[in-house]
Length: 321
Ligand code: SF4
Image (cartoon, rainbow, N blue to C red):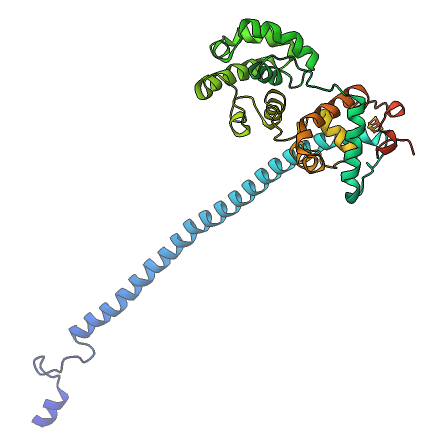
């Protein structure tokens, strides 16, 4: 009986085996297992909420808006405007001028170009045996100043202006310290007078600062001067120093080189590169004078006098057969 009662009765706490379910330790374990799970889920849910909301908005909005707007607007506008305007203007004028006589300028075959160029030069020297630079000058400084003034202006107008300019400022040292408004007043009739006065004073300053007040007889040094580009430098070298470094390509030379079939290029630098191999180097300065003289007297930009032109029978743009 005693054994039965002992086995059926509840064991004293001291004899119970630890780890069995129902003990304090198991309660603690249960709490420990269940609580962290709940707590773990709660932050996960919360973080999921915060994770989606904040990341969704910045991720979509900034990604779509900045990507579309800047990509379309700046790309469309700058590309369209500069491409259309400069392309239309320079090509439009020569094309229409030549198109009046011939819709498509006729060409001279490449292998015939040297003989064609030689014959043109021969005829032009016969026509204009005294062709020369039509700007008045007494020294390189005066020619440099006159050439700067001749941009977008006739030589005749420049020659009416320079006597007063050189009387007031006979050399680079005097012009370098001139007042802008005084020079502007003298050169006003040549057009673009503010820019021209500014360039004249700056050019004179460069001569004083870097060349002892003298005009350098060197292409690289000349094009470093204010207001002086390759065309002006070629004018200086050919006419003031008798040095043939290149061909002066102004509006007349460019137009006649096209009409006479010497080149189809319209960019002055490319026209110059096309002309140089066709003519002997020592004739480059005179070639410019001859083409300029023929352009001014016969082969006008708008109304070329093909009917009385001595080159008509070898000019590919002449209406004559
Ligand atoms: S024929 Fe004479 S005027 Fe006519 S386009 Fe030729 S070069 Fe000019």
